[in-house]
Structure formats: structure tokens, C-alpha cells
Length: 455
Image 1 (cartoon, rainbow, N blue to C red):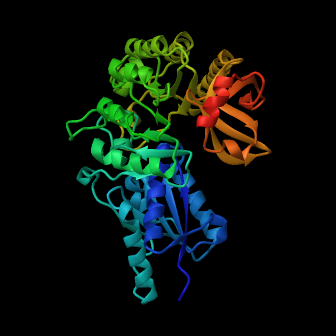
Image 2 (cartoon, rainbow, N blue to C red):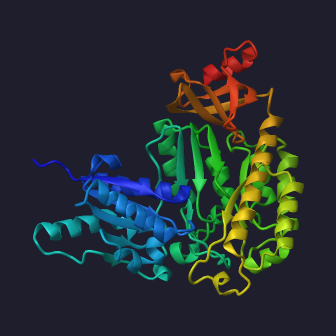
Image 3 (cartoon, one colour):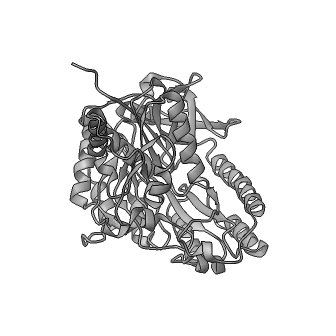
């Protein structure tokens, strides 16, 4: 009996892509492929691409060259957002065997089998074959999740977007908004609980838009998930400010399982720029949402997405963003430098910002982010919070996160892996991690020790 073909994966981009890569990997393993590390010279490489990264084309070509340097005879398949947007471009890259669009990628195993079988019989399909269909034809939702980590699972509950912001290609790459049902989501979550998963992160392109087409809502989803026994924590990966309504905020505030951690895209602190972006809120609504969260959960962590250098962003408009972010109680920023995307409205605007200026503004906001995050960590010094620790050991230490997204470091102890443990937060190290003391420290109460044992 011959050995099974081997396959390795590489993922670019967001948590949503990582959850989908895991699902694709399971489909190939079920088809008889053996998943291996990239350095093990696999027969097949799968690259899951992103269209948000600034140099999607260069990144794609770089990884293809790297795959070929590992195995010059490898079969290389490319999927993901960039594959839907530029299939022919990618198919022309030397070494690429197959490109699959958004509607075809979940049939990856069948497409790879087909091409490899043709090659074995001497009937070669085109080398750089692109198999795609119009994005408007993509109507069904395919659930996805990562299953190789008992500590934390990323579960896709929604896909696509109907917002068509002026700078964004996601609707062109992933289609219109669609989602799972509550009942279908509960089936996956109950299976995760049975496997010992402690935290589930709900992901999507526009997660708060869950339920479209099913007469269900995101609030109904999280209320149902809160009742599933065995999952210690749920975390919402990102939610649009106009969908983060009082019902969602108040529910998280009273829930014992949903983490007090909100990641809310802002993109700009200038109302003029938000209007040009076609965002569905203004700074007044955004500030109201942030203040509502902090009023109900003073310890909550709030992260923000911001884009610098979109067309029309003058120095004055940028300074409005900088000032706005300093005056609302947010705790860290994810800062992106605007780059032109084909087939978007923004790329046709004639008041572009020089790239050097965009990058300087990004640098300034990242400095601000470091200050905001440091201040948030300092607020928690001397307190005790529960931390979910991960299995990986790094230089004799283990890492974990509190419910409100403080990254905590302790000396490695296998007894704490995949457990939620009370930790006394003592100081911040040079890497920006919170250092803590073990639960058996004299600074930790008997009640906390009991909680650690119970978990």
C-alpha cells in the first residue's frame, strides 16, 4: 500500500481565514491526505490568501517561490479572498497549479484529486488552472472552525458583507452577508464543549449581522450560546458600532461567560472621512457605544480598527482622528495603512495621500496604541484576574489571557494548561506582558485557590 500524499497549509490574513484553513485541512485529511509541516517537503501546498494586506500580489508570489524552494515538484493550490479577486493573475504565477474562488474552495479536495489523477494518467489539465464563479452566485454559508487547539477555538458564524464601504473589497471577495442558524451553531459549540474547549471566539466578516435570512439576530445567538454547558468563555472577535447596540452590551455585562472585550472598527475619527468611506455611523455614535460599555463594565477592554491615509484625509482630518482616540476610553488600536484596491470607489478618488505620509500617520497611531495599552495594563496592577493558559512553552514561561484580554505570563506549569486560573497581576515586563504570581502565592486568597482547583 502506497503512502498517502502529504499536504501543508499557509494562511495570510484574519482569524476568519485561519478558521477556514482548518476546515480545508480536515477535508483533505478526510480525503486521505496526511497533513505535515511545510519543511517536511509536502506533495501539496495550499496558500489561503488575503486581499486586505497591502501587497497581496507580492505576498502570494513570495510564498509560491518559498514552496517551490522546499519542493520543486509540489502541487500548489491558492484559495482565499485574493484568489477570488485576481484568479487569472495568480494562475499565471510560475509553479501555481490551481486557483479556487470563494464558491469553489470548500471543494478543494475534489479539485486537487481531479488534477492529480489527470496527471497520473498523462492527461494534464492546464498548469495554472483557475476555477471561479461570479461572487453574486455565492449564496450558501459554509461553517468553519479550527479544531487543533483545546484551549481556544475560532468559530465562523457569519460571512460576507452588504456594507460596500468605499475602501473595501470584502463584498467582492466574499459575497453578500449570510450566516449559520442558531441551531446549527449550537451543534458545533456542544461538540467543542465535549472535547474540552474552554474558549470560543465568534468570527465573521460582519459578525453582528448574524441571522440575515433566518429571521434571527446576533443577540439571540449569544443568548443561546450562554446556555451551553462546558464552555467557560465566549469572545466576540469584532462588531460594527452600529450593530453593537444596548441589548448586546447589557447582555455581555450580565453574562458570566461572554468576555468583557469588544473590538469595534472605527476607521477614522473624522465624520467627513467616515461619510466618504460610507460607514454607517458617526463619531458621536461611536463614542456613545464606548462610553456605554465602560459604564456597564469599567474593566472591559475595547480595541479599535483605524485606517490612515484614505483619500481626502488631510492633516487636519488625521489630527481629528488622533484627538478623538485620545478622548474616548479605548485600550488598543489595530492600525492599517490605506492601500488602493481595484474596483473600489476610493481608488477612483483624486485626492490621494502620499504613501510616505500615510506610513508616518500609521506610525503615530501605533505609538498612541502602545500608550493606551500600557495605561490599560497599569490599571490592573495589583488586582487578581482569571487567566486561561495555553499549552505552548516559551523560554520556561506560559502565556494566557484574562477575560478582558490582558496577556499574562507565568513560569511554565503543565498543571495550568487549558485551565482558567486566578492570577495576581504584579508588574509589566519589557515585552508588554503582564507578569503574575501562581495561585498558591500568599498574595492569593483561599477563595481564589478554591476557584483554581474547581476549574
